[in-house]
Amino acid sequence: MTRPSIAVTSGEPAGVGPELCLMLAANDCGAHPVVLADRNLLLERARRLNLPVELRDYVPNQTSGDWRPGVLDILHRPLRVSSRPGHLDPANSAYVLDLLDAALEGCRRGAFAAMTTAPAHKGVINEAGIPFTGHTEYLADKTHTSRVVMMLAGDTGSGALRVALATTHLPLHAVARAITPETLTAVITILHLDLQKKYGIVAPRILVAGLNPHAGEGGHLGKEEIEVMVPTLEKLRGQGMTLIGPLPADTLFIPSVLREGDAVLAMYHDQGLAPLKYATFGKGINVTLGLPIIRTSVDHGTALDLAGSGHASPESLFAAVREAARMGTDARQRS
Image 1 (cartoon, rainbow, N blue to C red):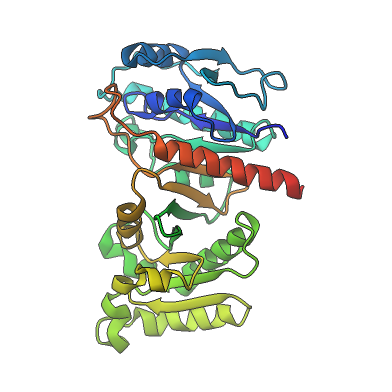
Image 2 (cartoon, helix red, strand yellow; image 1 turned 180 degrees about the vertical axis):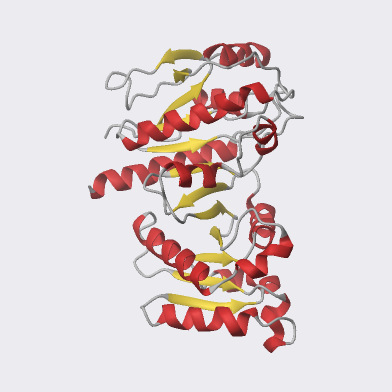
């Protein structure tokens, strides 16, 4: 079977993204990766790190589905200004978003089965005067998707761990106000449906973390569980969903509890991602649920201090491309 073509955006040019993308040429991820980047940026980074990579211009319908060791297909998009490893320049912020737009357009017209994103730098994009809170929110806006769900996943050594978030990039003081029946209903519904559609789990079991310590301790440590979460979960259980919780987050991530579910729903960013990254860091990935396309990404940032050194691990990018290829293949077989 022809390999699925995966659009891989190289992200912030001053970060580790370009060099990690070059390493795809030496790793068989079961996909045909097409890297979106400035050709000269990739050539310079390959020379700096002594990576023997042949860059080949991607030609739809000619190079599609093809992968050969040492060869990397690229879709050239020009930098606005030259870039040096570790040195951010707001002038290249529009370039980073151009990569995302081109990958998204290719996914929408069927040229790519999915897209995988290397890290972007939120701060420098905002310094350029472009409001940007992250890939997830950007792609949701571009696809006119009212609600998406951020889920990270990885292999812990004792099994797969999937952690979705009810809220994403919010300051901690704003989280409690954001945990509403409407939010929980929308997020859990998307998580349930995509576990069925993208992971083939017929009857997903979702472990739901409480918001407060000890899941509120019967209302003594917060009433969100009693007033918001329990009634909402009961309503969704009435629709046939298997929801376990709210559970105390401090004991939710032990293996005996995790074995009872297919995914965890955490209420806020660090509640879910701190234990996941501890268990899987370097090999974990991010999956955006609810989009009309398949999108995966690495679970780390731009690592400016490592850019150009050759010391950054490509394992998360490899895992993200493999998962995008798996989901893309499954979607193609179902269609």
